[in-house]
Image (cartoon, rainbow, N blue to C red; front, top):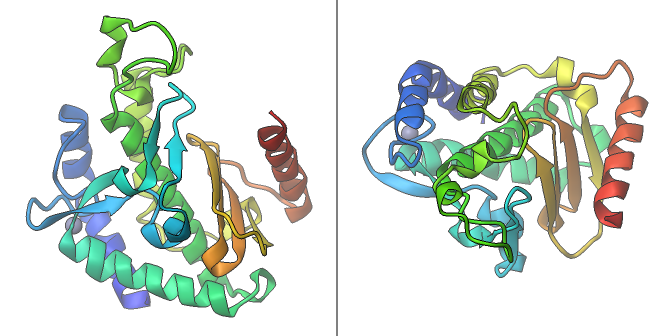
Length: 247
Ligand SMILES: [Zn+2]
């Protein structure tokens, strides 16, 4: 696992400038977003297929415009080597570990891998928002000049400028170069679950929640916050979960 994981991070590091320049100049680019290659491009699912496979008809609802897209169709470009050989091997190992162990039994390397994986999901979600056009608020009036704006740049807030959006994506991609995540360990919460259905929500650059019946676990992760105490993170996480499910 470690060898392929290292190679994947090395490829991300070597192509940081190339991929960011391409993403900025052409949001819907078809180069591999992991290594910048133009060869053997495949579709890499934003929400991995193994995570939602029992729920094929589930959709991702974008909170910015209320448009939904099915998980199965929500993809970003990645070359065959990065997608199948490197990422595929990494995720297969991660799945095996998650099935075998309870959250409390994971070692630091395994925790680092889970955090990396959640950060990677966050990065893909940001790219997805950049690649999708705003179109319109579902059920609201069609406003032509808004329709072509990337979803990522529409929030109705002052700081969602292209500059800010690209900086956030650049920063998220840079996190994927780092192997050690010890400082972030308290920002990750792992729940054992027997829930049969897949659940997911996130807020760009703030937090992500994903519940995966296949590995009987749910994860919550704060992308930017670091906590001295795991209990503080737990309390804040529970507040957010309650709010999401009560709204
Ligand atoms: Zn690649």
